[in-house]
Length: 216
Image 1 (tube, rainbow, N blue to C red):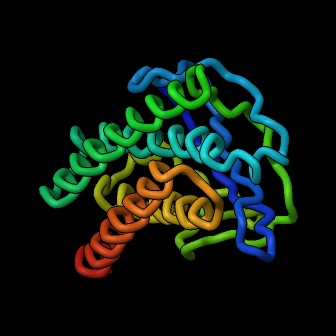
Image 2: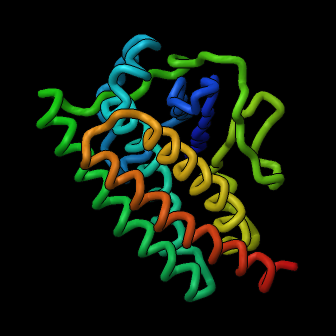
């Protein structure tokens, strides 16, 4: 059985509120999922480019984050019991697949190459300040957020586990988008970041309402 854990960390915020560091570590054991093709693994650019090329690094970080959400929605299509969960999952897959395609197209046009995959263990910097958590047990003391696709697939109550994992996953995307808005970015990235904040905040609020109504 596949076991895949995606670890995210946002670390080292500057006092100006700028984008100092984003870490997405893709840890795969056994055979990788082929739901969405992964680009060739490459190490990210030096730390300074986090500030000097925020557009490039935003795309490099947000695409695998979106891919993770799409994989979760693929499980929801099969395993979710509530129609509300299935409908939300379909919307997430539609929107984030479209955004992945947009970001890949921009990256190719702007940088003349395909989007690299962030190498495991690379890009870790800062002192852990500015970490976010939601009190749902998915954020460790070191500020690492775990999304466990195996646990989701095997959950006794899929809808409950899907929401429990997707809320902090969305919160991380919103946080990343808010950070890049503090940088000098291309209009396309600025517009996309605003769209992510708006749409995913709405979905977070909806899922939190379902948590209260269904599982309390």
